Amino acid sequence: TQETLLPLDVWATPEAFQVNAYLPGINPEDVEITFEGEELTIRGKLPAAPEGTEFIKRELYHGTFARRLGFNVPVDADHIEAHFHNGLLSLNIPKSEAVKPKLIKIQAK
Image 1 (cartoon, rainbow, N blue to C red):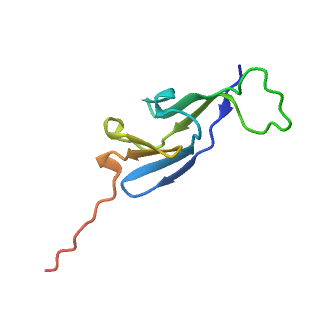
Image 2 (image 1 turned 180 degrees about the vertical axis):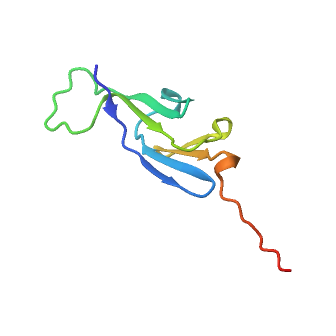
């Protein structure tokens, strides 16, 4: 079976990357999120239509989905947080301390 590409919104803040994905009708337990090397993977399966359904129109996707997302800066994989609310999966992926912006105070003499 062919996996569909899960659409994502991704943006960066000074402290972290934020990732959102719509997963309506799916149980959070049926979503697998892994981080390996520099790559985040989200995969799961959207429920199939009841067997024998004769569609008048069929536009919704049913079946497996996956999305891989690479990061070009180090992230703190031990502190990635995933939240699921009303079909919206939200991930907070903190940047490593080494790449977070540092404020340098000017010292007047």
